[in-house]
Amino acid sequence: SGADILPAVVIDAWSVDMHYALQELPPDLCPIANLLPQTLARIESLVTTPLRTMVKRIFMDREVCKAYWTMPASARHHHAYPGGLAKHSLEVADDLAGQAHLSEVESDLGVAGALLHDIGKVWAYQNNMHLSPAGLAMGHELLGLSRLEKQLSLLESDWPDGAYALRVLISGCARIRQDGSLSFVLLVRIKAADQRSCELDKTTRRGGRSRIPQAWPVEKPHPPEI
Image (cartoon, rainbow, N blue to C red):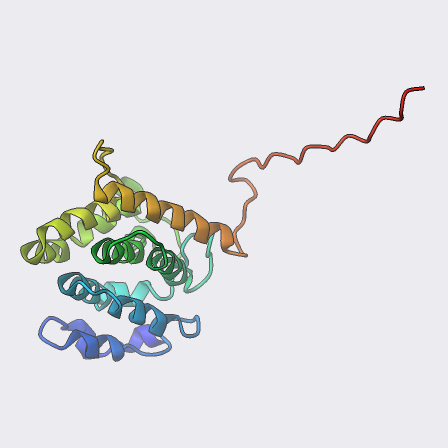
């Protein structure tokens, strides 16, 4: 598979042109047709330069390349098929990109946060989709946040506010503040888009997760009284 023949440019991506490096990813890296170029196009659409650079570096990481494009988004629930994680993440990112009433910076942070909101699953799950010890202990959100700290620190050196906000979005936790802080608002949007993607997935297995209320039995009209 493409994951077994990653180009050298991916392994040592710090000193090369990152647009070129991403374009060199094997086209069969993801089993879902066109998903790889669509995701790369979404990354390229980020206008904020340091944010776009950080996201590119993350997607050129060897561990990310070997797992992200082929693993399911979940073991038994939504997008539970090869490539499901990448498909779900792009659906959430596309949802954020199409939302109104967001500034350019807000949209960029929302899209980046959406692409990375489940990135911790790369390390939280093993090949058999059983949780790893780290995944069991931390959950995929905090595990992703810890694994990306090097990249987030680099972003912080160029754009501190962006790094602070993105940490919140990746962790899935935000302080609710009366001033309606940007991080909290974007996190709510990402969670809503995440839920929409899950519900739209035709393969989602709903049984056993929650009890769906039965429809109200419409009463037959009573015969008129005489």
